[in-house]
Image 1 (tube, rainbow over the protein chains, first blue to last red):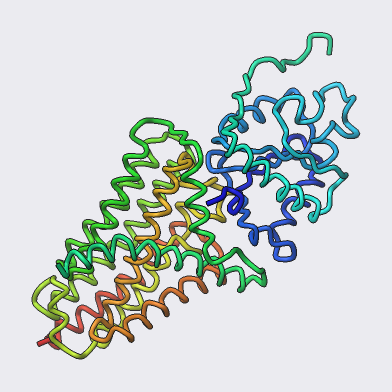
Image 2 (image 1 turned 90 degrees about the horizontal axis):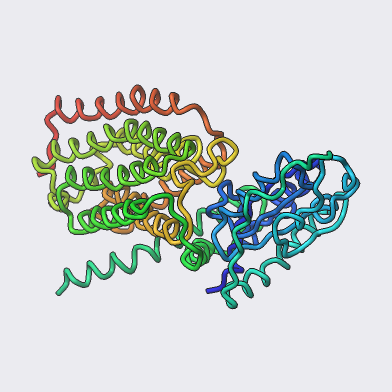
Length: 156
Length: 287
């Protein structure tokens, strides 16, 4: 039986302005009803399949993000939701911002927009499902991300 | 030969039935919330997905408790099917619940610990009612054996209606549904992530889900016993209690765990004792 029928997501808010978070939560409301695809918003990373990240990464939360990523069992997929998570967005040249999520952990799918519509997020989740399937078939494991390496630069 | 067939039916049939019950639960819940909802076989998809995932454990004994839980739930269901000693069934079933608590405690995660200690409170709340249920069966028949209930055509419900009402609330506690979903639930992750099961992943979690399938059948069988003399009426009672649990889940919010202990140790315990007193004073027996 395929993995794609029961994707459980964990939602990580990385320094987001809350705009994308509201849209992610809107996907779970009766209007959009993500549960018809079997999507459950699960609290613990140990039972999650898809990591939905909103917001850009900064020096404060980078290790939290890496920790959560490392705790998700394989096969796993990372979905960057919103402009900030994809590239850093309008915060890209802030003194404390490292950039998009893909600067730190491998990202499989991007949902652009500021903020993206719930339909777009659902579309992203459904697109992530086939990637999840391929990862299972190819037995591709996510590499453990080392926690060191993104310290605050001395010239900042 | 007949008994081997029964064992096979329980081992294979019960999880299928439990899976459908869990699927129906999610389907009815979503319809009550005006949603389309997941497919009926969604719990099966969940379990098969969890079996394919990697297994991350905190310590090596974590998944042993899951195995103990599943074995003892199956054992208590088998004992119920073979109409064994009611008191013994309750004790065996308690071991299953305790295995999950110990498993949660062994991980050391604060969320799992909070969930486990809340589950202990849940056991504290429902166990007296279950024991009084067994005591009522003893007072009516002179033995704890469920097979003694076959001697009469009057259903058990006619003798112990108040204990039936108490058991309906116990079902709510045991199904881990609102307003008693303290220890773990799909909805409570804002406050305690996943409660007792926070540190389980992949196959370990799948084991817990399969154990839940057996447990659902076991719990509904406890309600079936109230009208055991007629299979159709017994099934109707089981379905009614299942629907009651789902509707209560959807119309109530989670309350403090103190509220659960207070309710069960005052209202539920008192109405159960009143029922037992009634049986004792009027010396009612099933002959």
